[in-house]
Image (cartoon, rainbow, N blue to C red; front, top):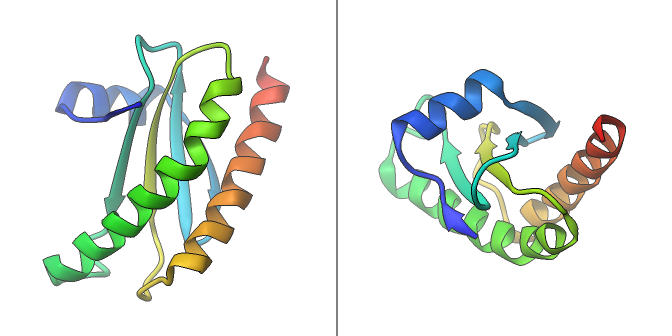
Length: 115
C-alpha cells in the first residue's frame, strides 16, 4: 500500500471515483489501478492551523494503515483511496477507529453490489 500523490492521479480519482461516507469521514475510491494507493486529507477551511491538520492526518494514517490493509488483502482488484476528514471538531483516536470501521463496512456493501 503506497501513498497517493500527484495531481493527475488525484484528479482522476475525484472525476471518475465513487464515494462512501460515515460522518466525519468520507472515502473516495477508484477501482482498476496499477497498485493500491491511499491518501488522507483534512479541510483547511475547518482547521486553519497546520498543526491541527497534521495531527488529524497522522491519526487518520494510523487508522487507515491498520484497518485498510486487512481489507485490501481480501480484494481481488487494485484500488485507489482518498480518505477525507470532513468534521469540524478535533477527533479522538477511538472515535476515528469506530467511524473508519463503519466506513469500511459501507465500502464492502457497496462494492459487492457493483461486482
